[in-house]
Image 1: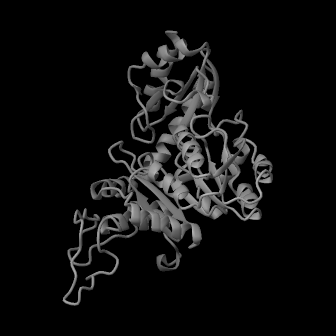
Image 2: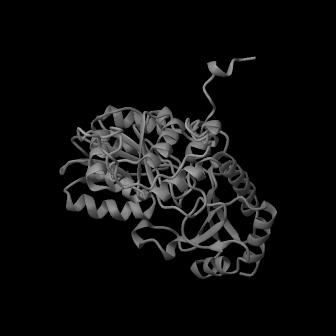
Image 3: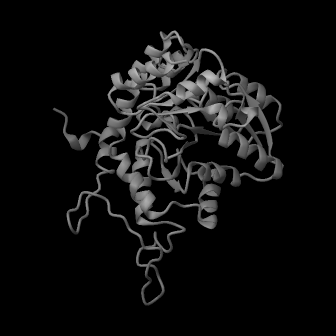
Amino acid sequence: MTDPKDKAPAPATIAAKAAHYLDVHSGAIVPPINVSTTFARDNHYQLLDPAYGYSRDDSPTYTAAERTLADLEEGESCRLFSSGMAAIATVFHALSSGSSVVLPDSMYWGVYSWTLGYCQRKDIRIDRYNPADVESIADALALQSSTDLVWVETPSNPMMHVTDIARAAELAHAAGAFLCVDSTASTPVFTRPLSLGADIVMHSATKYLNGHSDALAGALITREDHVLWQGICRERKEAGAVPGNLEAWLLMRGMRTLFVRVQRAAENAMLIARALEQHPKVESVMYPGLESHPGHEIASRQMDGGYGALLSFLVAGGRDEALQAAGEMQMIISATSLGGVETLIEHRHSVEPPETGVPENLLRLSVGIEDVDDLINDLDQALRKI
């Protein structure tokens, strides 16, 4: 039998044990919430702990979650933010005016809309690629004399496109660019982009990492120290886009059950996707776990043990039929967001700007951990009322 001291703990163990937290003074096994905004200095005006001076810079409560996330993603360092969008904005704030970036033409609408306006104001050039065709990144790179950042979101929200992270990293690095991957939908349970060559991985920690729909947070994790990461850390410190201590503690609390929650939700999602694929009132299902999905082969290579708990499907008919189906749900809640223990459904066309091109008959399903038969039955009864 292998000596436990010789074997690195598995990611599920790291999450469950909060990166092996143990209070050496009291023996407490739950990381505490430290609500202090400021920290004392000694008689020589030196901080008692050089790591903590003011909570806009850092806090012991952030550190517990950041250490755990860095370990889960096999990265060197992590920084928490007040939201996923705050984390994304900080990456772009760290770029200089006149930079060039390559972004997917189908992505989470909040990122699409914000980057469009921000990059225009800061004279940052955007060229776009098809996230379902990783080689189209090369075409976008060829349009620029130099590139600073390539952005990947996989699986993408809500169209569920799958992008080959390893190949994207090769293309980005050959052009001298950093690769940042939004891995919110996959989570470190199924994909670790840094091990596939990405430089930075981003999470809207509000979603699966927290998992209980009760805390707003974002996170960036880097594979190693580099100039972009230094700029990101400087921006966070100076702008103070940090979470509250309660939110950071809730995130840490949620991550301790990350693996069991996400694995159960993904198992449910697979069964639901298969059921919807056979339903007479459904045109098509977008879920990378299905062999019919065009990105299934890539997803099978870079997603280990599951395909996530997010899926979309097209209702037979149009906007009216999709809205009716969502409205007929008796158990599944119509609401924005994803990644909680509860299953949510959303008519994306109603909330996204028209330029994102989301079909009017698309419903996005964030699958939770309820009994899967209850979920399938609820979907079936709602669709049959159309």
